[in-house]
Image (cartoon, helix red, strand yellow):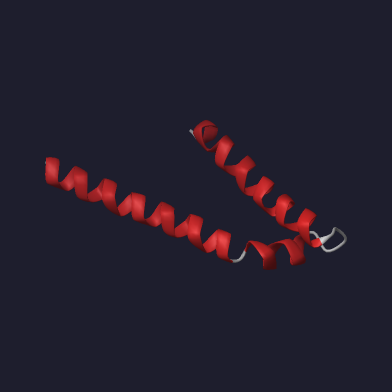
Length: 62
């Protein structure tokens, strides 16, 4: 049972970090698409602020 729990936790952690990596990799493109009127710096900050808001609200999901 402990091995199964540890394996599930490891897989979940890998998926979470993969998600963070992909989002960070495409953050510039997302900023251009969703915040076109802003400067490039503001686009990137807005993209990461949106990600941060979603991350902070995650515990209230349940």
